[in-house]
Length: 154
Length: 177
Image 1: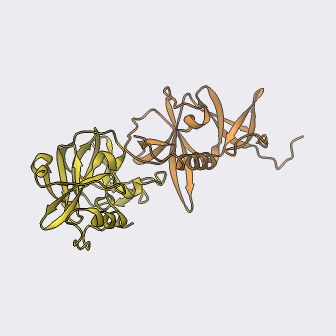
Image 2 (image 1 turned 180 degrees about the horizontal axis):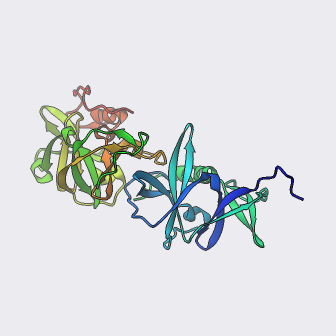
Image 3 (image 1 turned 30 degrees about the vertical axis):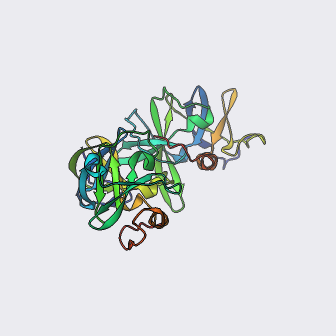
């Protein structure tokens, strides 16, 4: 029985390299159509370039390289999410392979062996989908990247 | 196309239009404020005046030239930005810093309406390299920070090593560490 005060959480389901993940809907600003990505030399791990969306320059995070082990070459949309930097926040773009879906559900705890960037799991039909902690995902990749700063992505 | 004027203040660092020199290093476009560049010289014209030296501490500098009685360090653009090696044809001699910066070519001079802040997602050396980003004809191009080529420590190291540079005052040409 569901308590009267129960309000299910909302999540956005996204596809990366054939796998499904979820992000809290409260973090998502919009799903953007394909846009040209602009690249320039830098040393920031996980960031692959920028797009211009609604008059803003938005950094693009290559989440698929960490989550599914390869940079996606078929992404069709950008999921635009908010990322916090102390008191400031910034829009961030995540290339996704397919259309996204809004779902509601209660987040379950993650399994102990799962990485820190998995905040929990949410049931979708017969399967559980990992809910991503975007901040932890970036932090983990940046920590890994600090050990190998010799190669500059372009 | 320019970013519309209603872009939020957070996106803007500087909103005044300025003239920039657009140049290429290893096929990558960059911009630098035109008033920070004293002269643009061909590498051929500088070759006879350049003194070659090796510095393990600052490998992106391999030559020093004398400009206006000051020793000026020649920074290789490919090495500075970690780009594939190319053949530089021009040197941008900076006005306020003792740096000549090797580039492949100069595209043109253009006016940009603003320099937009580098997104906070960029947290590495690029925050020293760039003042921000420009949006020119549907392209986002980094605007190079003229003081970002060499740090104060690198100037001091080079001043100790470079031939003829030991007596140089470094009131000019010193970048924040």
